[in-house]
Image (spheres, rainbow, N blue to C red):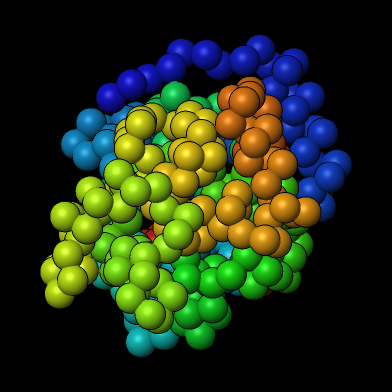
Length: 331
């Protein structure tokens, strides 16, 4: 596992966080230092557990950040994605047999509860785990706003409406805007596909009959097309996976955007950020900029993660709780 030791100085981190707070609408009740006295070793505990999880399976980094994304887009960042039950978001179309990392979150929660019982929400643990997953694989460090409470209900129907890899760019942008995010957030957060894997079922439509007349997606680079047809043949196992970024599969960097310039985005929702007609006046210039400047991508990704962490005003106070078990509400 590649670890990049490049924590910025406190002043720089605070300045970055403050600037993002000003443009994000994150609620004033959220603060990076909210657990400084009540759970002073929280960050170290989470980092240790995520480090152990990544040593066991490096792909877990991408799984944890995806879990955070899928949580925040439904009911805000309230750990509703972690709840079990008949209406569980785990059973939604985007998450069923796809979302991963629940056991890792359970392990982190147990470690945190042992150190400071009843203090830290599952929502904050998931948010911190996503940050650590980025940082421990070479990505940026940022101060995470904390103080969320855990929601009391899941929302499977809303989870079924998460942004989809099959949707056109305008639909994806609209879903981001519906939760208070913008076009920059669409591109920057898509950059999380710089690591991780995707199932054949999510991109095989591009390989053989994308137009409905037997042709593959014309925006897909021919060598990659040939390779993917071998991995994902017609009638093959849809659960087989391929890397989202072949150049640096397990490292958080800006190679994802370089791939898009070459027609090597794995998912349709990746490649349309550069190749679609709508991209010309919306996302294409950002893709080009991030491909040329990793520091610019890291800066915008950091701000987008902070903004996403404030989607729909995370629940707190009497409208939420600190779950003892992330899978069920307290008795």
